[in-house]
Amino acid sequence: MAGLRRGRVDLDRGMVEVVEFVTEVSGYLHFGPPKTGAGYRRVGLPRVVVEALAEQLARPGSADDLVFVGPQDGTLRLAGFRHRSWRPATRAAGLDGLRIHDLRHTAVALWIAAGANPKEVAARVGHASVSFTLDRYGHLYPDADQALRDRLDALHARSQARQSAHDQRRTKRAAQSRKARLNYRRTGRDLPVWLVGVTGLEPVTSSL
Image 1 (cartoon, rainbow, N blue to C red):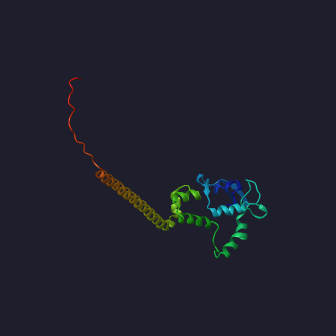
Image 2 (tube, rainbow, N blue to C red):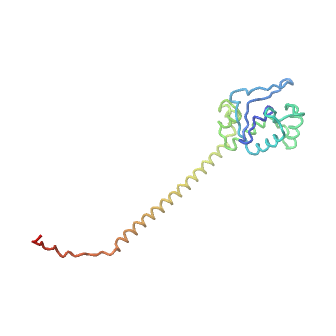
């Protein structure tokens, strides 16, 4: 989050491109790429997050400027952010003791609750393998299994409703076809019939 630059945020598409991180070691800030190739990723954002980012980016700035900054628009440092913002906010919310990294786990739990499969979760968090995601977050999927079963039941119910509507249309068409055939036969029997008697052939004329 601290290394996110304005040019990596696409508000129109609701996407954030993750290509850079900032870490603090012994008081020094280091900007660098993600640890693995899977760390390079584009993450789609829900509308509520896009709206919050739009408000954050309303102030003027260049594409290379950081989205989240510290005092005097400097780089956001972990210790200062934790002291000035994080701890007061978590205490006010009754969540004292919550770690900043816990937000990552919370995000994963929300994705799974929303129906994300392990591959989707791995892609969003930047895991190199789905197996690692399952090892770390597999315990969250039992609840997701019930949600999956509910969706399957709903899918079956919609399928049955469509089949019932199709059967009704087919039955109606068959009834209309039978009615049309009966009307044709009835009309054919009621038509008047004229019988023409044959009186014979004209005699042959010898002069011809």
